[in-house]
Image 1 (cartoon, rainbow, N blue to C red):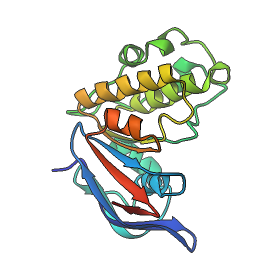
Image 2 (cartoon, rainbow, N blue to C red; image 1 turned 90 degrees about the vertical axis):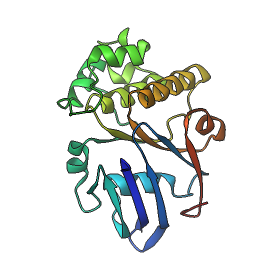
Image 3 (cartoon, rainbow, N blue to C red; image 1 turned 135 degrees about the vertical axis):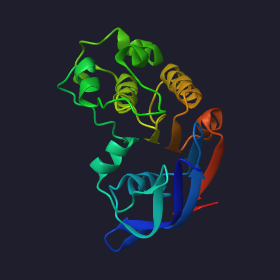
Length: 214
């Protein structure tokens, strides 16, 4: 059984339809990349999956349960994490406090991410536990955004533009982290503009254009 299933998903904003009959699935420990330009519908797909954009048709299933009619906070509690393009860390909180905000209890048959495990995944964060978010670089904030989501011990995560605007050294750190998450059995769906990045981490790459997969 696939961990994530998207079937015939159509969605948009008000009367503006953005997605047209999008379908794909991802198994345990599998990385799926949605590759395309700005405006192709990649971010809208992730937002529709996590409940931030209302669908007009289709369905989304997570671990066998239909989730497209649930609220975002309910979906998150089930174990589906989401890292938005804007990162949205709490800039007035420290690294350690941001991680605590994201903390959820461990889940059966799912990798558990303690602070020590997260700092092993992102060693740079381990040297700045007391640093506030507003004193971090964009790359450091991206690592923290991913780590905070993992603190919720998700079974699957959605990553929106994880390499956007990052220095090569930080991109490499994110690549290594995704590869480690894959080994830990975490399912990942990511939206990405960089073909090189997508090909480095993904098991399957879907090209997206005008709200449709090819």
